[in-house]
Length: 332
Image (tube, rainbow, N blue to C red; front, top):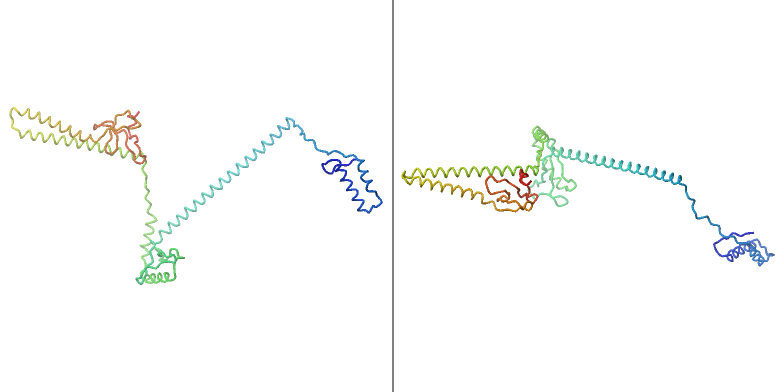
């Protein structure tokens, strides 16, 4: 007979365990005529079998089995990806629908509020009809109420803040106004006019439009300066001719006339110099090689002459000098 080990221990312990089992059984059945020492001798003659364990080596799969397993794995992954994408798209669609519904609800509420606002007069503060201090609500702030344009209904603003005394004062005020019936036709026309009148839309000008307007202003100012200079030159010439007419006609007339013409030319040159002297030399970091001049309006020109071309100007929004409209060819 071969004994199977009950525990993974040495053989003496295994035999001792079996002896304990057998003697325990004999004692339980009152077998007093059996020599317990013979039980130990009997167990000592038995063989102890070694523990049986499963082989740890795995069976090597064939290439076909590996390929099939990879195919199944790939199909499962694709199915999971499709399911995940479908859930993601469904969630996004649900979120977009909820957002759109919320926006529509908000727009409807806003429209209803605007419509209701046009039907009610501007809220008024509750006055004391007896001439005392204006009453305040439970929170210590003044109370306000509104009157419907057509029905004359009274609506208390934040009604939960109204005290009984304030309500009594409002009733007293409205009782005094009951004799004064509102002009219903006038009120209806006012509401219709307010609802029919469209709101004015404010059109914001782009930076290009602003630059074009500035350029037009510069050109207009330039033309005005040129016209002013021409008018001043014409006036100086007329004044010189008037003075020549007052001089005696003798041999020195030609000399005096030549001197007056030189004086006129010098005066006109002084005018042009005074007009363009406000332009100071300027160096633009984007084109330091160019010889530029800046005026008092922070516009930069390529010369100090009247026919100078604008190159750039200081943009207060961008806080830097930017290219003036139409000067791209100069900077090319």
